[in-house]
Length: 179
Image (cartoon, rainbow, N blue to C red; front, side):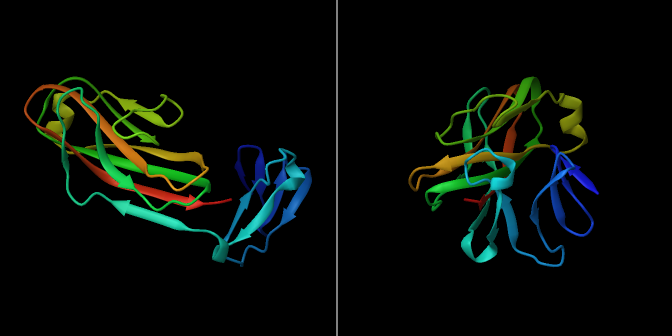
């Protein structure tokens, strides 16, 4: 049995809330279903959304973004998302040969070149110059829910603080429509 945030999924595919109340039976051999809430907040309100009703949008950066120290930049702009709730995730790889004097930060944002809230839709790291000498460094935001009222772009934003050399950022941004 796999446990994720008080939701248990048995090897047979039955989903349990707190391990006791079955609120949806899913055939483990069936693909293309995502469990989502219908908004009531009650565990038995969860329903399966067939793959045909959801959208997946993915974009890789075409080239590395050259960063200017302490300045936010859009690594990726993802357009064409329709109204609804989206599960988003992103990864940014920092490269180059900077003399690091501060931190690196990434965010999934609804506002161009704007970082979000740390621990929510933003992450921060403090890699050293020696770590960049050893190779590229990366960080990710594994899951962030965004509810859109209309079609607007989302951004994967990155920044780094360095006193010399160069720092670039490239990555991938994914969005899965779940409601």
